[in-house]
Length: 181
Ligand SMILES: [Zn+2]
Image 1 (cartoon, helix red, strand yellow):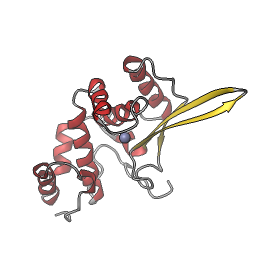
Image 2 (cartoon, helix red, strand yellow; image 1 turned 60 degrees about the vertical axis):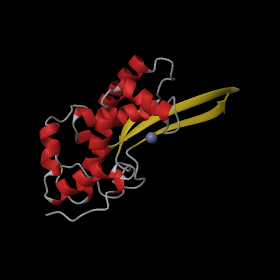
Image 3 (cartoon, protein in one colour; image 1 turned 120 degrees about the vertical axis):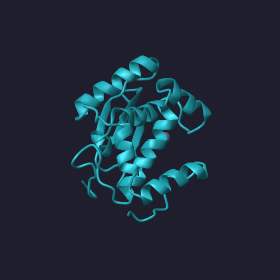
Image 4 (cartoon, helix red, strand yellow; image 1 turned 90 degrees about the vertical axis):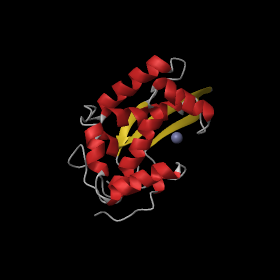
């Protein structure tokens, strides 16, 4: 039996949904449940493959957004910043011109995850290229890229709760990274 966690990843969700996750954590069934729902890990295993994956989605849905200069898995995310992904825009004047560098980083955690979870986090960070805040326009854009976005974000958050209380990794052997990894 796993200890009952505060479920910080689910703050803001309706109580009946949080309650379901808490019950499945308590009886140890959340992990097996997620594994049955999402049995297959994706095949995007390195930064090159991730770059290609993100670029393809960007080209399809955000044709007007500026190209990305870097896309990478980042082992420092999640453990340090408590963020799952980041998007940064660095603007600098270079030779009299304003140059903008855009990057997307995805927590290494997502390297060994189902395709649906990777898609959720990538869609989230891509949407930030156009919408900075987590507002209505932002989530509309997320849902345009992935109609099941809201369900997927909830399931990803449930997965994080599972890992938080010490649940075993579900899709790989080294899902979690130590501090500074
Ligand atoms: Zn965000």
